[in-house]
Image (tube, rainbow, N blue to C red; front, side, top):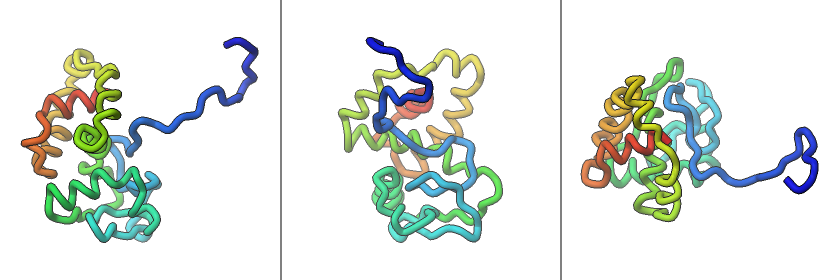
Length: 159
């Protein structure tokens, strides 16, 4: 820095490259990422994902899973359990990243420049856990076998 920076002073503000829920989470709105309960949600009319409001249906964050649910999966998502973590949310961030490959290659290439920690994840067992819970799941659930390898998805999981 070329000057003293005060405590709490904002020195950089930028939009995140990618945003989404953690891998282990109960149902959340995929537009704003607020938690949902069985009494407080609406179904996205296009894809079926639970959302907190009609405004969030059109959130830019929600478009990848909404579009691929409609186009690749050809069936709406049905989530009815809101108490414990739901496994389908584990793949939202990697799915959004993979969406960049076809629709925003500039962002895809930026992501691939980041460290993916493959060896560390392999040594802890996390890589194999993600292979089953995320990579294989996404490829089957969204019918992406012809678009992404397991290795593509695992690389994104580690970033």
